[in-house]
Amino acid sequence: MLVAIINKKSEVLFIDSVFSQAVKNLCGFRQIVGRSIFPHIKETKDAWVTAVANCFANRVSQTCEIILGVGENRSRWRVQIFPLNANQAVVLGVSLPLNIAALSTREIEVMRQVSLDRSTEQIAESLDISISTVEKHRHRIRNTLSISRAVQLLIVAKSMFHVDSFFCPSTKNDQ
Image 1 (cartoon, rainbow, N blue to C red):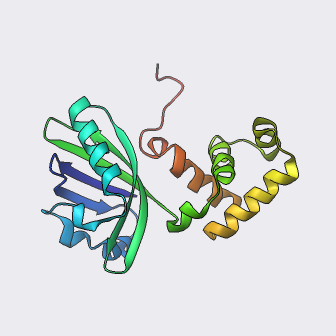
Image 2: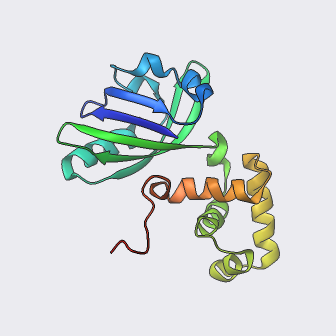
């Protein structure tokens, strides 16, 4: 999990990785603090700029996907940007497999259904496809993303579609 505080210029005021020293080293966090994050965003700058601008202008949280990198090292992140005050926002992110873009449109649809904790049978019914087709899609997704276990698939799917659930879980009492 990535945690950062940025200003309107996308300058990083604070950044940390909650779980992994390797992620900290890979992304060069020490070099980022006090500087703009732009040089470290690869291939996804437009999505970042739009999300940050909307967050500050509308004072609502925004979600986008960014690819961070230093040198040849790259990592894909699904981030949620929350307005903290008029000049600062909190950025929370979870790492995604870098090769997620290799999934087909139908595989993405299956991942969305997985993210909702649906069974293979429920996914088949929802997408109007056979159970064996769902199983084939799940198998290809796991191969493409190098995922060996169903729980890993669920975590990646939730990261893709429900990143806010990792940071702000709702309870039945919230209403």
